[in-house]
Length: 433
Image (cartoon, rainbow, N blue to C red; front, side, top):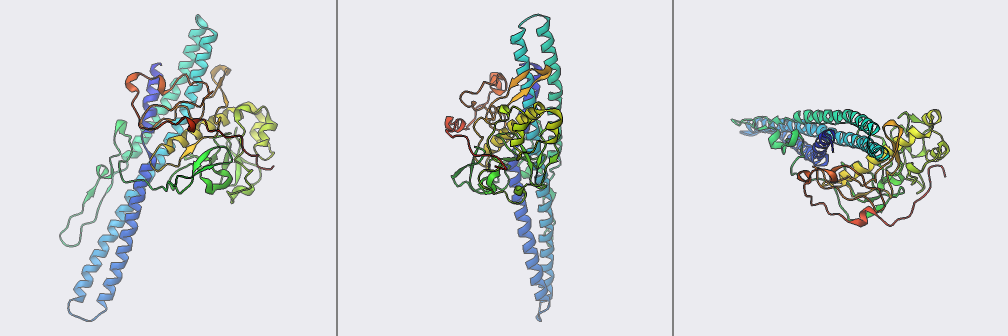
């Protein structure tokens, strides 16, 4: 590995160490506190008004004290809401940074694979040196982008400053709740997960095979981006934290649930008529979850089959190759992001579709490089050991397993070969059948 590779993995690991589900759970706890304080403030205020309207010695003074306590509770509610907002922004930014880092990782893998292919084709001489120089030049912008993403995430965490509770009635002083009291958003490079607090999520132990071939956990997981069986034919899809689109880890298709339209894999814009699935995410069991590996698509007509028979305008103009590359990248990123969430406390259990994200991708210079398996490299947040790829998948040839021994940190993540090679057959058809 080169210095550029080392610099990328350093930034990548720090970004992934920010466990956005933990941060979101902490935000939820502060929201609950704010709601409880607001309810108590309202109750105290009502009691104060009742006391003030009753005749009797000392009731006026009691009403004043109750009203003061009500004001204190209202101030505490405002502080708790402010802290919750800070944490929620940090959680959302963390999820966005992880997805972007995974995209950069796929791009780096493409360059690395192209470089290795060229070194095999021209093992020595000026041509090999030229290829290596070209590859290193392709890597540097990716490394720079990862480091900028890390810096932006650290800056967002720096805005989690806590707040000052209002002084208690009487002679009390307001307590300062700073970032240290919120679970320390610090850590390596200023990026780490919130510690403790618990994560909401009902792990029922029931697993559901989605129409796209993924297996997801049933139950309520309020902060996760992996869709469960309650989403019908979209079960097993992953909601992008950056765009809000639903992404199929089997094919790389994207769907805008707000507009109810598919997303063009070339232009990134919505196209076609509003589909019936816009407001009804439960369908006929043969809808948008169909399995059709992007790597196996051979032409615009086949791509149209994934979009209800309509050829995306971008594909019609440029041909299928760019669409295949983009869809392969989207599929890999979605699968890895889903696995990253599943490894966190409160994450929905998720196994990508068989063969997900295995589509080809075009590297620099036009060489075609096979994409890695969906599960490859989806290790524990914080830079742990990477679970192995599915049987038969080509080895990545790069990534965390190739890093220096001192960088290989142990993990308590249990590896189950059955998870990576589920014995399932291909599933149902596509939207419009």
